[in-house]
Amino acid sequence: MRKTISGILIFTLTGFAAYWSVIFVTPYAVLLKVKLSSRSEFNHPIYADIITDKDRHVVLPNPDFLYVVSGYDIRKSPVRITGKMPEDAYSSIAVYSNNTLNFFIKNDRQTPSKEFNILLVKEGEDVKYSESGSEVLPAPSNLGTVMMRILIDDTSRIDYLKEIQKTFRIEPL
Image (cartoon, rainbow, N blue to C red; front, side, top):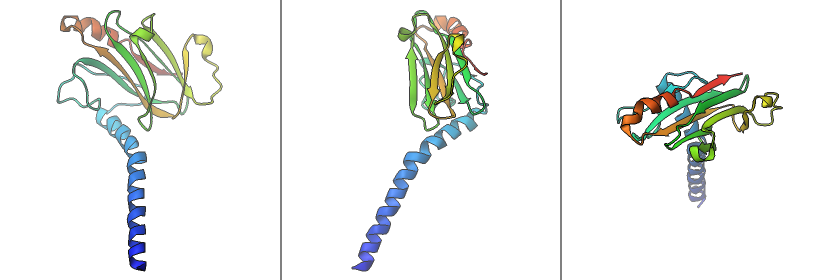
């Protein structure tokens, strides 16, 4: 009877440990894999071309979008994220914490000016850069990912959409 109870206890604890390892370790592993496979630095955007099945700069990419991806690092200072959105095509910007949870998203319909100016700061940090007109965004983690997507609604407009894509900047202050 004692062996059965200890076996059940060991099985339960092993299952519990495996479950929590997957829940907490997997997001960090995904972020690290994206970082290493892109061969990029934090706070430096990657401007992806039209995605094909051979591209993996973005996890499960959609070929109907142009992507810009950058890891952010606010350990030493806040970063400013700026750029434009096309006037007549869907686009969005999303920010993810280091555990891959999305904590901010804004699309072109929520951005009437079609320009974004975001100041990414540490949560609880006293913001002294707010006079710049930036939208101040407290981040739940010091490292994470920023992704902008632009819908390719008409391939004849690809040059215009790529010009818009290149306006994306992420700069440490």
